[in-house]
Structures are given as structure tokens and as C-alpha cells.
Length: 630
Ligand code: COA
Ligand code: AMP
Image: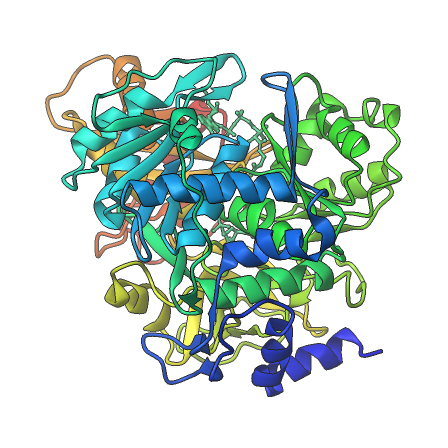
């Protein structure tokens, strides 16, 4: 048997045969002419000339090969006290039916469809239905506000939006329809059709001629068959936070994505067809795309759509109940979920109530996994716990411990080693290779493996500027860290304005744009400060315009509301403090990094280029008033 090292070397030395044989395991209408085209611009492309259908591979293929009666999706919703099991044949029927609905409203190959959906099976059905007819879906997370949705409508320009009457958060029903109507009003691109899944918890106010009821449309639907699409045709666009208020539309090819997803299920997660796999995330995030929907279904697994939280629905035993009840073999979630459980059940008393012998391993991603969380999870579960590092841009793990190939030694704090196809290097600002153990910019040498983004939707130049222009021939991950002498990667921080709050990727730059729009704000800085539960929390430091003498508490309240209304509750922006000035370099750059170190109580050095060092005393006081900088 080959060791991981051999397999990794082979993937870099001969990508054609490595990914070509991975692709052979899927169904193609037409085989590719070329595995990878390194000359493609703006970035290499995979499976040129090949034709396939992602939905066929994820659904119909399994129905035809004997899995018709196997459960494809388990919907487990403690928040509505409901469960539903959908077999592969029922999934095929539902997906073909909804593909027919979309087609009857004019959707065809290449058209964009926005999905603004809660964690209900219809979200996955709508995604697969788009894939079936070659339409490009763009799922928008339910925790985003109308303005964020409007930005995505204007960028993706969909004719159709699919939504539900509401999402449900603990203690409140989030009505989607008013948010959606507001977003459609705000957007300059006009949406002609909205299809709404009615849920009993909220009634949607229907607009005649534009809004259609999901169930009624399904009852009249003429099922649509899978169409053949090019491997390089986009399957989806997923918007993610960047430096500014304009999110980046990460594109995903049909071919490379299907091949990579399928390959990872066995090789990284050690999962076979028929196994139960659970990614406790949301379809609005990349983890939800890759490992609630596409990965497990492409492999012929049973996937779980969980509408609930790790705690409070109803208690910190929620995850253990799901694992036990459905026979989950692998759980994938964010470290923050485990911190939430640990906080409420430090001794694992709830965990002890359940037999978890079905479970083989736990995978964590979305943010750096602090060693304490890893130790606690490993100690309580007595199972391997794997930290793995990836991004919306890649769609799957750049670094992981590949349990299906070879379980490697675990070094807590490191997501282990680069996965096949990823030639990960660490470079200095000047582009020199850093020595083992030395921090630098983490980059991936082109070509990146299948599934990684070929560009940003409709904006090659932004893709080049953001990812490819800093180092010729390399993709810039935006993460800083180092590689140790054993080749293990250590991902330490972001090099841009991205912060990670409860495993959710957010932009402090975007929050600053929103705060700056307030009439009383002259300038501001938003920093990500360390948080025991959520990993990081945003904190705003605000300088008011001259002459403003309103009560600080009122202004802060307005600023908090402004971020919640314009970005959404998921931004979790709750802390702000008015200061007289912001610390800057002599050239006027705000010293955010220094403020983060002060807030987190870390050692810091006075920046040599600081304009006026006294300002840092004022900042320290402001941070202390909010409970930081201890
Ligand atoms: N629709 C509407 N609102 C949403 C939402 C959604 N889909 N998801 C979250 N929100 C809201 C929450 O209700 C909360 O609102 P509040 O300020 O009124 O309380 C706010 O957004 C912040 O949410 P979150 O950061 O998730 O905090 P929380 O306190 O609700 O829950 C955890 C904390 C740790 C339990 C939760 O973040 C969690 O389960 N994380 C798991 C990790 C995960 O899913 N990561 C995704 C990538 S793998
Ligand atoms: P997202 O695109 O939302 O998946 O966020 C990607 C970013 O989250 C990465 O660029 C990292 O900054 C961070 N991240 C994700 N997983 C990890 C991990 N295992 N270790 C450290 N950082 C991580």
C-alpha cells in the first residue's frame, strides 16, 4: 500500500494521472480531452472538453446503481421538533420536479438562481435542481441582511430567487419575505420570479405575478432531466468576505468540483458509500455546499441537514443525540461549536448519556483550532480529532490529516500537512522561501487542484489582483503562518481584514464602511479581538465628527443596529467605544494590528513609524472599559 507521502508526491509529479483516475470514478457524458490546462487564463482549468452533470452523479447515478431506497438526506430539526428521511429515489423525484419548476419559469443552462434558504431539505433540493439543468446557484446565508442580499443580486443578476417563508433561530422566527422584498427593492437588477417554500411558522406575503408557492408549483411540475454541461461550466457562485463591502463571488466548476468532492470523502474523511456523514454547518457556507450537499451525495452517503445549534436545542447533548440516533460515522463542525458545548457541559455529562460507538472521527475547520478545544474533544470523545484548514476559495481542505489514506501524527494547533494537489509554500514579502519555522505568507503554487476557484464571477481582474498578482505563479491564501521541519503547516492569522467569528468569515473593512456611513462618525477602525467562545469578536473604535456631543451610549446603539441592519445579525457586532483619535503611522495607516495585540493582552512593540505614541494609552483605556487589554 502506498503511504500518504508517495500519494502526495504523485499528485504533484503527475497531476494528469492522479486526478484523471479520480475522475474515472464518476459518470461523464463525454470524457475530457485534457486533465489540466495550465495555460488557461486567468488560472489553470481542469477536465477540458469533458461533459458531465453534477446532479446526475450525486443523485440519479445512485438510484440506478442500487441505492434507490437508501436514505440520502436526514432532516433533523430540534428547533421545530421535526424529522424527515428522504431516500435517493425520492430525492431524484423531488429534484427533477423542482428542476421542472425552474425550467417552467425560464431557467436554463448558465442562468443564475439565488437561493436564500434556511436549513431545510428544500435548500439542497433547489441546489441540485439548478445543477440538473445547468443553472448556476448562489446560496445566500440566512443570517445576512437585505443589503447583503441586494449586493449579491446585483452581482449575480439572477432572474429567479428561491426562498422560504422563514428561518428559525432560538427564540425568534426570522421572516425572510420582508428581507427579500427589501433586497429586491434595493437592488438595481430586477428579479422577475420568486419561488417560496411556505413554512408553518410564518406566512409570506405573496406578490401576484412575481411570487410563486413551492408546493403548488411542484404539484403541476413536469420533471426535468439532467443536461450535459462542460466540466468548466460553473456549478455555483458563493460570495465570501474580502477586504471591502463588495463580497467576492467565488466560482466553482462542475467537473473539478465533483472529482475533488468525491475523492475527499474516502481519502480524507475515510467515508464509504452508505455511511452516514454529518457536517453541522449551514448550506449558506462553503462547508455546507461541500459537505452537507455535494461531497456526501456524490459518494452515495446519507447526509444530515441539522436545523439546530450545538447548545440550547434543547441542551449541550444535542450533537450526541444526533450522532447516536442516526449512526453518524464522521462529524464535521467548527471548533466554536465545541467551545459552546464545553462551556455548558465541561465534564461531558450529557455526552456520557449517549452511545457514540458508531462515530469514527471528528473533523474541525473554519477557524484555527485551539489546542484546548482539541484536547477536550479528544478526551471526551475518545476518537481521533482532525483539524483541517481550507477556504471558500478552495472548496476542500488544503491541509488535513488524511484518515482514509494514513492517519498521521497529530500536532495540536496544526492542521497537519498539505493535501494532494496543493503545493503549499511560505514566502517572505519579497517572495523568498521562508526557512522551516519562520512565519510568512502562505501561498499555493499553480495549478491548484480541482475544485479551487478558476476566477471570481464576472471579475477576472479582481481575482488576479486579490490572489495572483502578489507572487507570479502562486495563489495568495490570505493566511500567514509557517511550515515546520516535518512539513506540518501552522496557520496563525489572516494578512487582510478578514476575521472569523464563530467560524463565520467576516470583513472588518466592510463593517468600517457601514460605521463610516453614520452621520456622526468621522473615522473608525474595527478590529477582531480574541473571544473564548467565538474565537474572535468585532470591536469598533470610533472617532466622532467635531462638534458632535451626543450621548455615547446612543451613538453606540445606533452603530450596532446599523451593522445588524446592513450586514446582518451574523456579524455579531455588539461592541464599540468612542475615542478621540486612532493610532496611525506617519503615513496615515491605522495601526490595527497593534490595537489587536493590546486588546488581547499580548506582548507588543511600539511601532517605529507611529505618529503619536500617547494615543495608544487612550486606546488601552478604551479597550479596558470594554473588558479587554487586561
Ligand atoms: N439566520 C438568521 N440569523 C442567524 C442565522 C441564520 N441562519 N445564524 C445565526 N444568526 C444570528 C444568531 O441568531 C445571532 O443573533 P443574535 O445576535 O440575535 O443572538 C447572530 O446571528 C450571531 O450568531 P452566531 O455567531 O452563530 O452566535 P450564536 O450565539 O447564535 O451561536 C454558536 C453561537 C457557537 C452556538 C454558533 O455560532 C454555532 O453553532 N456555530 C457552529 C459553527 C458553524 O456553524 N460554523 C459554520 C462554518 S463550519
Ligand atoms: P472560509 O472561507 O469561511 O472557510 O474561511 C477561510 C479562512 O478561515 C481561512 O483562510 C483561515 O483564515 C480560516 N481557517 C479555516 N480553517 C482553519 C483552520 N483549520 N486553521 C486555521 N484557520 C482556519
